[in-house]
Length: 264
Length: 259
Image 1 (spheres, each protein chain N blue to C red):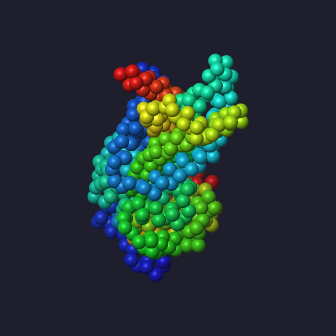
Image 2: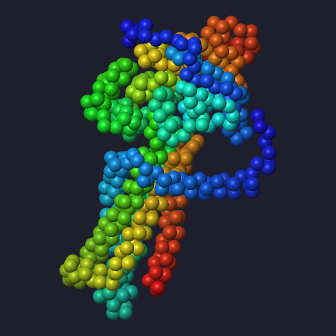
Image 3: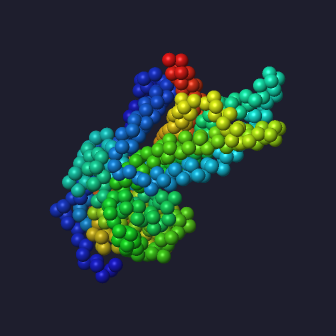
């Protein structure tokens, strides 16, 4: 037996674990970029995962986007009416949904639904030695399990974001239509009148970043799960909490950068 | 399978696995303390030992899942501990690993589980070629009728058999069995023991069987070894190992008989 030594930690156990975790996650992300362009490409698994991420989240995203659209319109109308600016409602909702609410709501919902699912699935595969079984069968589990999932989230979450924005605008239109008569075409024209290409571009970039984050965090936590079934639960939980936290941080950073780009 | 038993021979001039001075530790815990071992071509060696004695760690090092701290591990004339990437994958195709809990892929049915290593490692295989290979190994383990079932629908013994079949589909030269009879009733254990021997005979494999089950060790191993406290205490035929005055070895046997 080796003799236990207090000097084995550089700072303390907690700090050492934190920094080694940051380093490991950095290496994990780097490995994704190394593997993503290498053969073989698992197209079928990518399609399966895209189906899991995209189509199976559609109902939840529809409901959430629709309700956000209605509620946001209901809450905004009294304030705008006070200033006699109720006609600005479609533009306001358009800006809010395209620039902020669409990507953020989709990102958070997907972090909860997809992040936890990826964390739990890979965590369970790790503790039941299914990942080891792939490795000993000369199959690269990182390439097969991780790369396909990260690509699927990075591709499908922007699509879900655009869909969520459209459904949100439709929910908003229904609410507006219940109060005043307006055509859906006129409503959408008004909603998009103040939106520029850069706004949509930033929204798409933002959702790609959110999707990538959800994929990387879910896969990292699941792939490195330990301690049996307890570890699986922990991986799923940490995948959700950490990706939600990172989504908020990224939202702030991207908004700052996009504003800075607009000024210059 | 009995008709092909004559095919199998043990060649004591050719080692398929050679281990010298192997050390392995996890943080403060030293698990393997200078292991020396060899496995001859066509031979089955059963490694007995208590839980936590490093048996599973040893075969995970042999297959390259873990890197040892010190020592050399030569598998089919290649230092597996120094290989990586495609070379390691190429060597792994010659090694079959049967996991303690079978490690079947939950999201795939039995057919897909068996076909998976084949389709991922050999390109441009036709569907009928894959099907015939899958049916052949499924038949070898006596579960051809379970191909459409999900792993969750199988019993413990059936899962073990499918786990073994999945490794056999790549026609390995070496088989590593991690606790093949753990958690099984005596009848199912006897079936798995018979299967291990049949695999040795029919596929002419060299195998390491990690177990703490004396019956399994006695009936599958051409040689038996006892791993206690990170070192091999004794290696030889069952009778050679059993007829010892070494207190630790005797203690292990006595404990097993009491159990």
